[in-house]
Length: 281
Image 1 (cartoon, one colour):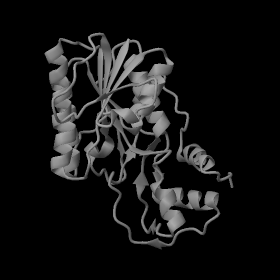
Image 2: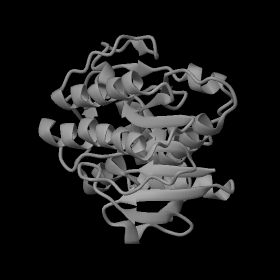
Image 3: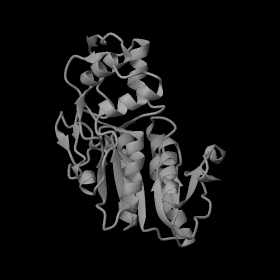
Image 4: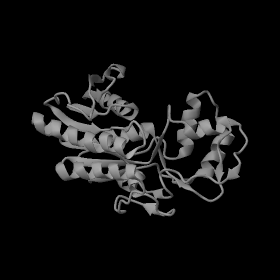
């Protein structure tokens, strides 16, 4: 089986290595293809331009694109045009994969005033960038019966240490009011991609990828400060998180047999800190 990862950045690379470990051939499309590790076969490609030939035996396609900046134009180019170009390339080359997974975001839900959201919650993006991601979802599901969407909450992990960096720089602020946040470790996000595209049976069109514990941002900051041996950050007014105030429920993903390696922020951040040489407690 050949797996094509269109947009093989950090998350796509981690997924690609996991596919390869299962014995699959993995082709990664990326502008800087020379940066891809073996055994991923790197092919230079810009998803917004003319795309290379698709391997004829491609069974799984993962679209894991990312915008270069947080503007509507950049998101339209990366997500909407990029997804359309991948689908056009598949049609051009007569390749019909059994699964095409688009890596999306829980930003398509907007703000839920602290309530729970599931795959059945109507998408209502609060930002133009969120609307572009939703448009890309709809494009894929409308054009391909093989299409499926994985809406990921905030990804953290190696190289994704924003909260840790804020604490170590002394710029972290604990919100004065409860502020629900949702996250998923990069490794769990990659594992979910592999799981959903290789699972037996008919998948649902949309899955929500978030760990099992939505949590108040203040609690996470308190935990990290304790683990780092730093004072708790001061309480003050903060800007609402980009993801909106909501609690994401990934029960549907877990019902497929998927198990999180890092089911909550505690296990995940302790792993990240261990990688930085920080001992527990």
